[in-house]
Length: 170
Image (tube, rainbow, N blue to C red; front, side, top):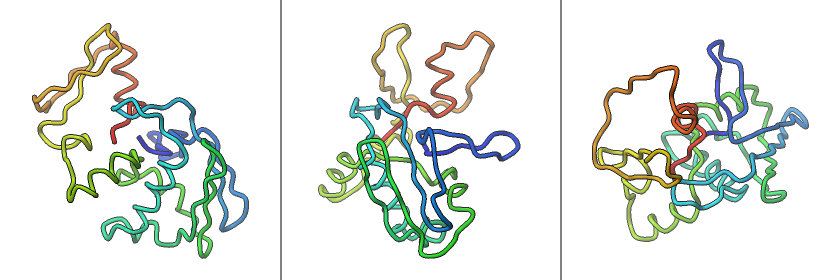
């Protein structure tokens, strides 16, 4: 999941970030949705968001979009503040991009400490398709790669949530 999304007219919409305030030209406050869970059941907190943003700043493939972010501060479990080194009008739009997914800090740190990236655990690759076993509330992990999804007006609410980014993978 991401902090923000775009509608069909590229307007910024809330995602994991339910409210945001532009405090000044270089300061932002983000209020996060509460109770959001990663696929492993861990609750997403501001620490995960801080960790994810700092990774975006550091990673060569994403740094150009986020390198003006100077600091990210956790205010409480569901609030972060961040500052930029100079005014950067597209920063919130950048946080809605496909590279701006929020990850589970603990899981990523464990994987990196083990010396690599577990593609399945991160929710990508052929063996990482996650499905739902209706009407149960648990996740079902499959090894089948899905190439096409057919939609109809009677989709389950849970599947609709998945399509709209409300289910989060670490």
